[in-house]
Amino acid sequence: MQLLDFAYDKSSTWQEEVPCEQASWTMVFVSYGRCTYTIEEKKQTLEKGQWLLIPAHTSHHGRSVPTKIHEKFVLHFDPRTTGELFPLLRQGSFSSRKTGKFDIIVDRLRLMYRGWQDKQPYYKVLCEAHLQELFVYLQREWDQAAVTTGTSLLVEQMKGYIQNHYREHVTKEELGSCIGKSPNYAASLFRQVTGQTISEFVNMTRIKTAVYMLRHSALTVTEIAEFIGYNDPSYFYRVFRKITGLVPTELVSDRETIRK
Image 1 (cartoon, rainbow, N blue to C red):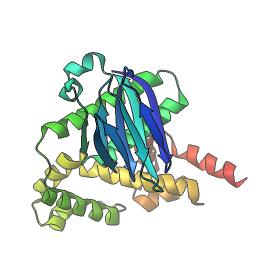
Image 2 (tube, rainbow, N blue to C red; image 1 turned 30 degrees about the horizontal axis):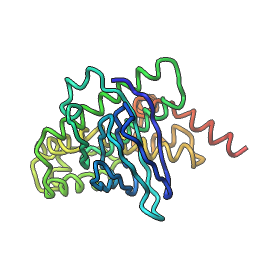
Image 3 (cartoon, rainbow, N blue to C red; image 1 turned 180 degrees about the horizontal axis):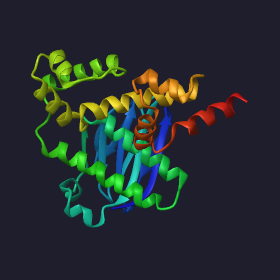
Image 4 (cartoon, rainbow, N blue to C red; image 1 turned 90 degrees about the vertical axis):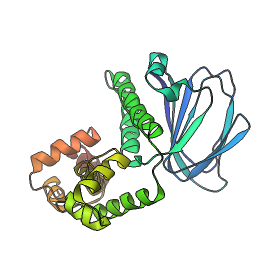
């Protein structure tokens, strides 16, 4: 799978028309708001968490919803031999679905986009590996039966509990109690729908808070680590780097530069 171009859009006035001569596939993922595409004379409204896959040589045009800001990632790629691995890439028409794995997918896309912009050695290899990982998540969801509304609500309840208690040690027993189900059912359902374990989601929630605090607070790295629930600063560093690709002191340096 060869990644040819990668863009991030944030706009309320975006408009684009793509002719059928375009030889690459297009993947769109909306991370905020909504926008519209017309493909093969069919209008498709994309909302937060929804992805759109457009085959090569398919003319289409898209635009923002007037006066409404939306944010999206747009990738152009050549599937090459991976079309044999993923049935989604063997379809002759466009496909679209809202993902239940929003957090993990948008996290990977942000990581890919940062790597694409920084252009460190072997960045394309790494970005293409992440792109193939994304297709694993999308294909699994596509193959599985659609998640019911009731199931989605249970997972949203668990996410809400984690958002309120992420600084503590969140267990499957607590989440099971939150939704009135057994601990093992809660843990299994959470992973099935989100693509993450409970601990992975807790860590990601903590690190999102840490990124904000490193940029906008006057606290030290150790103080921030303790605030979000990490008593061991070295473990915080490892988790932070694994999720963001950065070390916390890089964001502190940016903060200090801005203040000067």
